[in-house]
Amino acid sequence: MSFNLFLYYCAIFGAYAALSAAFISRLATHSIGSELVQSIIDGALVGAFISFAVGALDTIWSTGKSDIKRLVIRSMGAGFVGVFGGVLGGVVGSLIVKITGVQFFVLAGWTISGLLIGLSLGLFDLVYALATKSTPPHDNKIKNGLMGGAFGGFLGGAFFLFFKLSLGAIFGRENLLSASGLGFVALGASVGFFIGLAQVVLKEAWVRVEAGKRIGKELILSKPETFFGRAETCDIGLFGDNTIEKIHAKVLMQKNRYLIADAGSVSGTFLNEQKVTKPMELKAGDMIRLGSYILRFNEKPGKKK
Image (cartoon, rainbow, N blue to C red; front, side, top):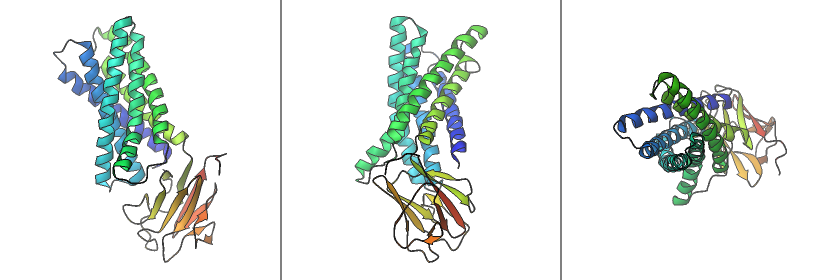
């Protein structure tokens, strides 16, 4: 999956997640007249659904559909964290509006919700690594998620408020086919898109498949070891070429350097057509060849070595 396609799906997944959350929330609170309770339930469901959806998409993008266990754990873990973010944002926004009487301040609540939804996946990865005593991630997902989620929450909240006030006035009441529906779609799409955008724009190093069966696939290098090969568990699966081993090569992240290393393959790994016999440092624009596949290594300009 390319970065552009990843961002498109982030927006789509976020929009559907928010709309689904709104629909369930309205069914659950149909007879409840309290705006605070409505805001809490809205926030909890929106936070859970968007975090789950973005977590699932991020897992599919980075590890593939085959790792079902990781997909379920990360998605549900992110969704669990997202519940708290949504509830906190809902309570804060509702209380500020109630105290001030100004609807505009509902944006504060959605900004907080977006910020904590953006935090959810990175925080879960960190907690999971600490709990399993594995190496913590080095992908800045927490920082990037906070920034993307906060901006997406603010902008999405602005769209939500616009649709609620304008279409609500036209139709005379709020319903899922007008104000609430469009508002939640805009909110979810904004939060999902900007969480993804922050990861893409603020990435430090990545690889792109330039030749082979999966041309155009891109992957951010965020792990201490990123594996390439025919195994389903590899970070980038290189299928359709029998000269490629199940685990053929790996990129090592050591401090601020990235190195390519062969994993004992028979056909070999080549860096700029030079056979890799020991870990070799990568530079922006370097070409890595594994069988019929060619991967280009890219790095953020001006990154310190």
